[in-house]
Amino acid sequence: DSLILEKSQTWSSQKMDHILICCVCLGDNSEDADEIIQCDNCGITVHEGCYGVDGESDSIMSSASENSTEPWFCDACKCGVTPSCELCPNQDGIFKETDAGRWVHIVCALYVPGVAFGDIDKLRPVTLTEMNYSKYGAKECSFCEDTRFARTGVCISCDAGMCRAYFHVTCAQKEGLLSEAAAEEDIADPFFAYCKQHADRLDRKWKRKNYLALQSYCKMSLQEREKQLSPEAQARINARLQQYRAKAELARTTRPQAWVPREKLPRPLTSSASAIRKLMRKAELMGISTDIFPVDTSDTSSSVDGRRKHKQPALTADFVNYYLERNMRMIQIQENMAEQKNIKDKLENEQEKLHVEYNKLCESLEELQNMNGKLRNEGQSIWALLGRIIGQKLNIPAILRAPKERKPSKKEGGTQKTSTLPAVLYRQVMNCGICKKNHDQHLLLLCDTCKLHYHLGCLDPPLTRMPRKTKNSYWQCSECDQAGSSDMEADIAMETLPDGTKRSRRQIKEPVKFVPQDVPPEPKKIPIRNTRTRGRKRSFVPEEEKPEERIPRERRQRQSVLQKKPKSEDLRTECATCKGTGDNENLVR
Image 1 (tube, rainbow, N blue to C red):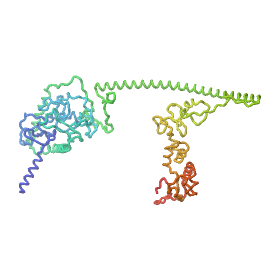
Image 2 (image 1 turned 135 degrees about the vertical axis):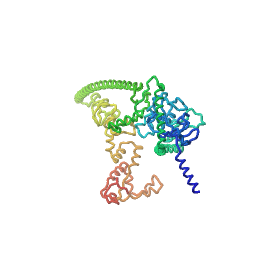
Image 3 (image 1 turned 90 degrees about the vertical axis):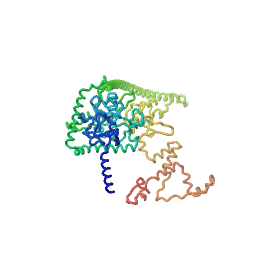
Image 4 (image 1 turned 120 degrees about the vertical axis):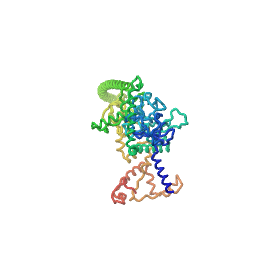
């Protein structure tokens, strides 16, 4: 029994060592019809169907045929290049060559919309010209760790309805977010990708586990294979690899030129991961730190007029139109600013002229009023002389009577100061209480407490519009609000504000009467509280309490305000813990 158990354990360990994972679908099932093969040069593993392997080599090295004599290589090893994908910034994985000589991940070519294949069975060559070039760098990958590569290549969106998550295909493969429809389902595009929020939790978990196992196996398999292979087998593999590379070089020179569109389709330089790596390498050799340059992550969404707020510099017709339109708008804005400045200067000159004329009219009005006063006094003296001549007291006519001084109302912008000028002229001479200027008369606001005017912008904090005033609500400036204490507010409420809700609210906030601790409390009015009688039966109240009841309400409240002054011998000013002095603001009973 122990021998059988030991053999089963060694057999299971050997089986676990030989489990291979496809780098495209992350599956670990290998069948005779679709087995997982491994490149004899780079050690990458892939399904025959996922990579489009044809039947030109009958015996290939895989998990099922370890003693085969014909090695197999991926397309990148056959061409002898270290490729860089045009659709994503990641460098690991298995690649396919495009018709223009570029390289892309086979998984990127399968999942990015618009990518076509010349031969669907062999999955080659890959054609990128049918894809819209505006997709390069249009969206930012949400999974890229380096923000400099987040806008490189082409990002795909989550297939879950209206989800706005975007990511690279290989970045989604790392997280286990790629899925494929079953073979029984007849779907034109069977490849789907979901974000972390909409992906299946269990499916994502085992795909993520297989991806990590694949990465560790690819790194260790090359070292182990070099140790296991004999020098003759290694030489045979290298000779076969050189033959494939010579054949690929001949095919590259003799193949027809790929079709390109007549119109040039340039791309932004920042959308190419290989270009960014070369620039970073150049900066490193020149000793320039790339960390000091901020990464532009501005949103390129459309504005209200349908055009982008900002476009990346490129040799495209859209960027040229954007640049020309931007220059035209700047010229129009400058012309508009110059025109508005001229209008402002004209209005200021007219305002100065009106001020001069207004001052002249005020002086002439004051002279006329003085002359009118002198004539009125002379007329009154003549009228009194005529009364003495006749011997009777004559009534002074209305034309000789002194006019009553009229104070302007609040609506006219009046103040408490009396003046002989008409009330109509008060609005035009009001100065701001802060800046002491009289411009922008329509933005002056009157304080109902200090009767001063303030500009809306001069206040702290500034106001955006005039506050609404009613019969029961007023407005005061911040200085009057800070200067007024609670006691003064109570007196103002009692004397100036009308009776109503305001008075009752003040009484709720402020106690009517304050009794210190050292003063003995007043006796309770037992007859009033216990008896239910009214009217004449108030005679049961003690006589010592009657004078206090007869005190008017306003007088009682004023007395309570006077009693609120703190006393020096108040026992509550000493803390029971630290024995320090304090007041009612920082002590709690």
